[in-house]
Length: 81
Image 1: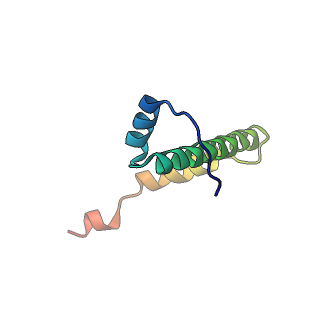
Image 2: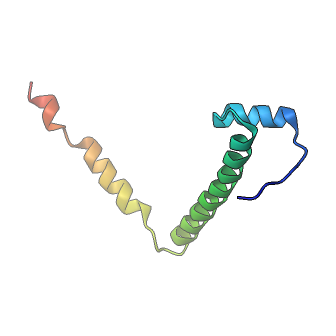
Image 3: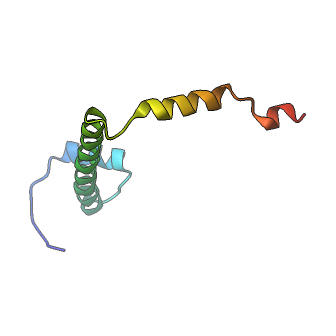
């Protein structure tokens, strides 16, 4: 881990700490850095899934049909009473 001296926007830091649930500047900055990296990875994964759907590699209609048939099938536990 490196040590760096930087000027921080105190209001932005306080708001980030509230959102992230952190209590120290160090924890807030590190959590914010991890959060943005995670957010970019998730966005890239969503974009890849969109491409896969467009290219026909993923067919949500199969999943939707399965979910629809499960929703119309009575639950055994509801009729056991």
